[in-house]
Amino acid sequence: MTSVSLSSRRLTIEADRLFVLNDGQAFRFHQSGGKGSDKKPKKESRVRLDVDADGATGETVGTAFSKIFLTSQDRLADLVPDPWKPCVLAASTGKGGGQYKACGFPPEFSAIPGVVYSLNENSALDQAAIHEWKSQNSPHPRIGKGLSPPRPISHPDPGFSEQARRAKYQGVVIVSIFVDKTGETRNLRIVHPLGMGLDQKAVETVSKWRFDPAMKDGEAIDMDIGVEVDFHLY
Image (cartoon, rainbow, N blue to C red):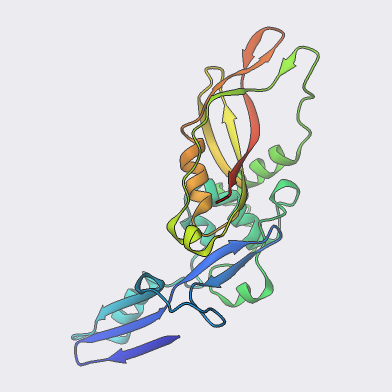
């Protein structure tokens, strides 16, 4: 439910907060405490925006709104944190495939400005994402015959987001990571998202993991691997 009120000096917009989930094929919205729920919406399930309208013109109000809402001049993948960029760009453009096949938007998302668009060959972000897609979808070296993958030696468990815990929402997030010769992790990328704040929890947790590096013929090497981060309440 959305309400809009305008006083002589302030424009106020209140709306229900929507959470993003992923069902393994595409993203979708979930309304906490919404229609069909037997629970009343909590205060944190509402969003309130206040815009100073004192002496405002259509231009200044438009500028204020552009800082809050996506516009046709925006691209969502440019605005999300780095671990999300290849997945969100795959969803926005319908490209990616392979390990990024879960990164998709349903048709109704196309009505949201700045969400669905074509790849820009001149964009450094797009070129980096295309390289990421190709590396994720290319055949990986076969383990064995002198090649062993990184082995985790410190892997703390993740915590739940408060929203996911209240909704009893659970599942598995897959994160791609680059493990260097020293066992440090870099270049974390969300490959198979889950939503409701759990993807961020997965990234925060995996960034703290430490590994024995991959070995080839007795020598430490760099290697990209995918790890599963399991979120289950019971």
